[in-house]
Image (cartoon, rainbow, N blue to C red; front, side, top):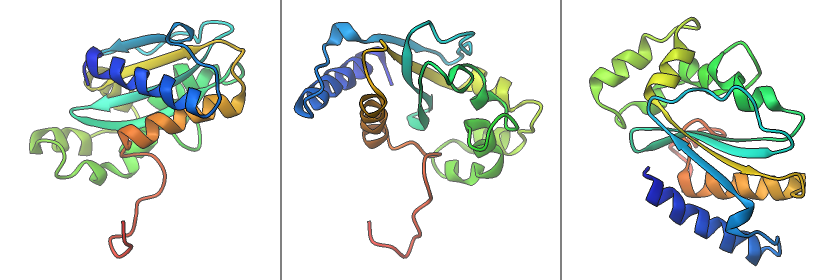
Length: 169
């Protein structure tokens, strides 16, 4: 994803939010796009909340949200498999096969060799990250709408359950 592609997504997010009667202007959003490599954020700026995502090659790996009481979700949990019940590091260690056929063979080999000790560094070195920061005037359900928009548009590989090949799409 490029900055220009992200800018188009932001325009669509504003349109979808307004269609849902959520008053959202582009000026309400602080957009950050970095990497790869990227540096994990050290904090969630107070009193902001965020929707964020990790991108690898042409694929989105994970989209999440963090409110004012979930700073660790935003800053560190996705880089440490043991930090929470569900995070990007844990998904890469447990379900790397979701990348099979989507990335070059040598990249797949590096993913298969990940351990709990190096997965966080690998995420920083190999993924891009976007952060969409919004103010506290947006409530939980509005932040959830923003997260769902990015999930629908980017189809993260490590989001939700894997669809059985026998089920219709």
